[in-house]
Every structure is written in structure tokens, then in C-alpha cells.
Length: 331
Image (cartoon, rainbow, N blue to C red; front, side):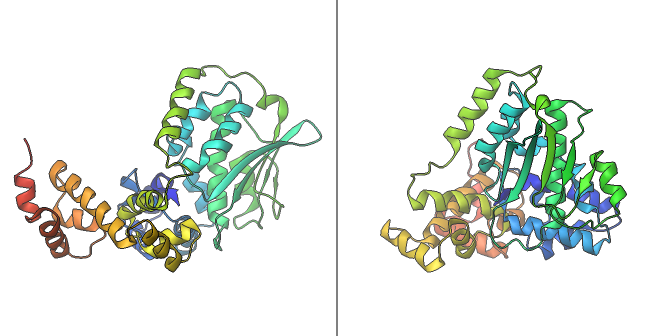
């Protein structure tokens, strides 16, 4: 999974290219308004397919690089605060390596020294079955460039950019974007950087802000040793607004067969359907009582295709239809 913040700028770029973003989102199996829900997650494969298909449909071979210009490390949320307030760029990379999982478990970042005064930053997709990688890799390396310019200054230039595929846009586009030599068909996706730059003390870092961000992530994440029910509840809660809170998607994220997932949940005296129903109930109460969203919008955000399904569910959960529930909320 990856946070929906990864869609930042998609609608704007597609519109500027003269197209409607909604059909592209729907074709990827995503709600058109998903980017507005900052708490939602989406499958990484869906993101990869979305940007690849947009590049192909709009005949824009540098779509990923263009989209990177609408994004920055702020899409990482609290993880960005850890990087921004590190004493050196090398320390920032240690923090990113440790905490990137809170943004997505689909990829890893690393920084390791070479033997000639350089270090190599790498971005690696670790999610299984992501066949469409070119545009999402170029998007990610473009966002990484923004990260290093924040850490090292606007004048930062990598010694070399490396892409593990042939050029899909004119090579001059890549050279202009990265402002350095570019190697295609490389063994990795990443940058070569002067080691001395990475170890240079940074100005403006605040250790207390960094500690607060680390504490926030460590106390809000689902513990590794938590029971399966807790992990499933967390995933369903994240996936519900995307319309993909299915047992197949959750089981795939946990590395289990759906039947195995159901069997293990039964061992904990519950079922996937019970967990899903409980999350929907909690979200329905939140949306109906404490927001001004319309009932059709709420039905969609709960993964229902019909408002009538929401009405029946509210009667079962609360004994009254959505309208009565909203009317009876505290002032």
C-alpha cells in the first residue's frame, strides 16, 4: 500500500495536458476524489498502473518526471519532518530508511558509500507483481531529487542519475531534469552523490521536532507483535475510502491466501466480514453525525454502490436511517 498523498498533482497535470483525470482514475480502480482523502491508502500497483497508463494515453513519455514537479517530500507526512530536522543529509537518510514504511511498504530507500568519495542513493520497489515500473520509478526519483535539494540546498546536483530502463523520452529531457549525466539500463534506480556533501552539518535542524515526529510514528503504528485482527482492522480502515477493502487485497498485503486469512481470523473469534462491518459502522457514525457529507458520498466512502445499502446498514447498526441519525446528533 501507499498513502493517497502519492496522487498529489495528478488531477492538475492531467487537466493541463487537456484530459479528464476521472476516467484514468476509474480505469485504475481508484475513486476520482481519492487524492482529497489524506488518510486513505491505495495499492502500489494501482499507482504504478495509473501513471503508466496516463503516460501512454496522453502520449506524454515524461509524465512521471512532470508529476514529480507537483510533489515534494511533504507527501511523506511525519516522515518528512524527520528528514527535514536531521543534523546531516546522511542522518536524514538513516531516518528515511527506518521510517519510510509508515508511508509505504512497497519500496525501500538506501544510501551506501562507494570507493571513490561518492555515496549511492537507491530507490527499490519491493512490492511483488508490479510489472509497470518505468513511470513510477521516474516519478519517485524526481521526488527524491527534491528531497536532496531540501537537504543539501537548491543548487544540489547529483554526480550521476541512474535509471534501470531505457530512455522513454528524449535523453535531453532527463539531462535537463536531473541537471547531471544520466545512465540508462543501470543496475539500480538512484543517484551518485559526493560523500562530503552528505556529512556537512545542516542549518535549521530542530532535534525536538525530530523526536516528536519519531514518537508520533512509533506510537500510532500498529505494533509488529499485534494480533492479526488488529492488522486487518488497520488495513480495512485505510482501504475503505479507496473501494478496495476486500479480503483479497488485505490478504495479499499480509502475504496470506484469503482462505488462510479467514481461518486465522476465526482462530481469533472473528471473521473478515465482521471486521469490515465494524469499520464501516465506526466510519458511518463519524461521517453521518460529525460531517456535512451527503448520504450518497458517505455510501461511496463506505464502499457501497447504492445509498439504499447505507440506509439498511444504519437501521441495522443504530436502529434508525441516516437522516434520523444525523438529526439526533448532539448540537
